[in-house]
Image 1: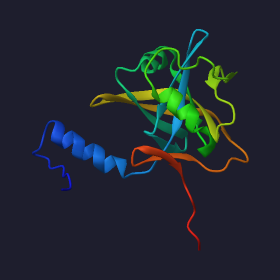
Image 2: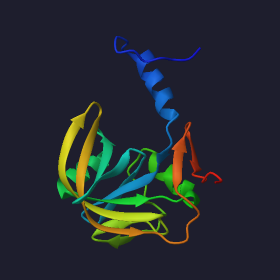
Image 3: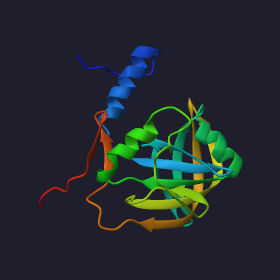
Length: 171
């Protein structure tokens, strides 16, 4: 039986139906990072997108309970490490809960933000505005720096509750 979301439905059945629908949507994967003093923080997200070209802006959505969100609210800045298909391990490490996600992870400062090596792309952003949205907060941010990665096999995506990548269709 297929699950269906109707506006009159509430509770766990509607939430599960919505999760099932969103699992069918392929999403890019990134690790959002920020510094609390000299201590790096980060989390895996699939809820990010380009927002504007003029001026360059991105949108990122973070759980309202996120420790990273508190750090970003304090600093007003974050890094967006767009992961490549070769970085499934990093996506898994930063998707777990806990304060020591950077333990054993190589990173370097870039634009005074934690940058992960070999990412498919890097963006440094400054928060322009935020909005509460259910159990998440949406950050609207100006892009301060952006660099595409070079020579990586393809983007890391999340689809049907597993990591994968994009494969172009034959023409």
